[in-house]
Image 1 (spheres, one colour):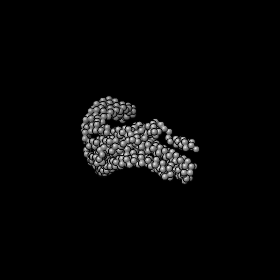
Image 2 (cartoon, one colour; image 1 turned 90 degrees about the vertical axis):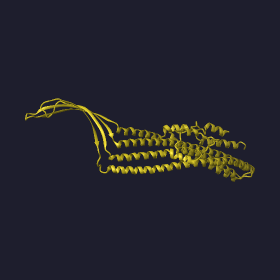
Image 3 (cartoon, rainbow, N blue to C red; image 1 turned 30 degrees about the horizontal axis):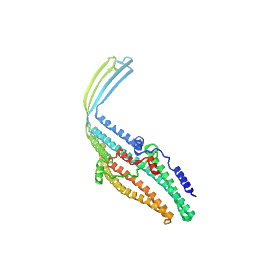
Image 4 (cartoon, one colour; image 1 turned 135 degrees about the vertical axis):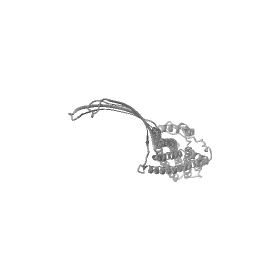
Length: 457
């Protein structure tokens, strides 16, 4: 009888170990983020979009630079011709010529507007890429914390299985000596089945969360570290919501994208209005030509010529069927929409800053309360276990106290991770989220080996 508890204990440990994921070297947030920089398709698409937008500027500038072209042709004519009612005679004429032509725009208002529009498109693409860069940090961090929380849930569920198993074993021993009822055994058995079910569900959730992280970083992550239990999360600096809101209205990448959109349609409007303006180009050409004769001349008289010319070309649009007026109306409507979108972006930036700041302050308060609740729950479990042994508490009291302890542990881990995410979102709302923030979170993590050491202790 004295060996039975240890046998059950070892059997449970073996069963739990088969359900837990295989341990591997821990991957921290920084390594996964850097992997995502070269693997995440969303981020890579944004980078290629920026490169494509960069090429719009030289393309638009080309419409204001000289155009030089070289042309040449060589021909042979064979035929017959009759002169002065004489018989037809065969004629063969060879000719060749070449010319070099240069055109330099002097006055093209639409082309200047197109260049300004291309520059605005590139600025917008830069803002979009900055937004995508910060979004990558947020997505990696969220997926990372989701996996960490899922790992914590598995760990908590496994610990709960072990604790309920020990309580079931104690209930059986007490029943055998007559100090407990069969109801205690049934209650513990029911809780054990529930704990096993929760452990299986936690493992399934961990698999799903790992798959989401793999979708971003390109490879299946190994065992992730945990948050250092002794960390103290600081309040945001500056600790003033209004200052963060003001910064968001000035530096938000989302607002910069909307500003770029507004600039694009302002230049599109100017470009459309330039459809009524004349254009002036200077053109110059130089070339030579040669002909051995003519099909219409009875004698072959070779002709060589060389010429050059320079001049101005003026084009004045008069009427285009109303297309220019319609394009102006369309551009004005698009500009009005861009202004409305910018205002929506400004309000969204304000909302994001306020929500993130409130999330941090609320999260810090929750962490403080839950940390105290975990300590109180641990003491409650010990007190109920002692009370059960001496007969002042029943088995269900111990099980309820244990369940409350593990639920509080999960809530505390979730509150810490959500508070860290709110901190990243606050930085993103103000355009100040960088890799340094990833490094700062890395400093709060414990490796898998350290976690094992803590568990053993």
